[in-house]
Each structure stands twice: as structure tokens, then as C-alpha cells.
Image (cartoon, rainbow, N blue to C red; front, side, top):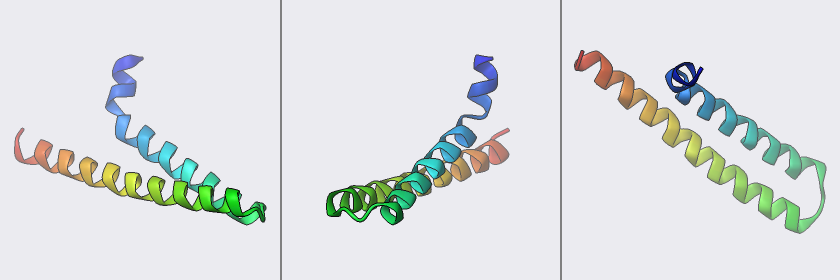
Length: 69
């Protein structure tokens, strides 16, 4: 089971980060409180940056796997 999770670590991280970003965006639309809006916008920015980082690291890892068999 642990080996299976290790094989799909990038997929799990990407889906989790995308889900958290979606929750943060939905929180912005659902509540009209200034504090929750600012925290949700900040969280969605952080999740978006981490999603870009995860995907770029995933691409780099795949290119290295192809180039270095």
C-alpha cells in the first residue's frame, strides 16, 4: 500500500491542493465577512502557488525519468 501511495504522490498532492484551493474560493463567495474573505483569498493564493510548484516539479521529474533511464 505504501509503495502504491509513493507512486502516485504527485497526483495526491495535486488533487489535495486543488481541492483546498476550491474550498478557499467557495468560502470567499459564501461569506461576506472581511476577515474570512481576506484569509480565504490569501489561502487560495498560497494554494495556487503550491499547485504550480507541484506541477512544475512533476514535469521536471518526468523529464528526468525519460532522459535518464
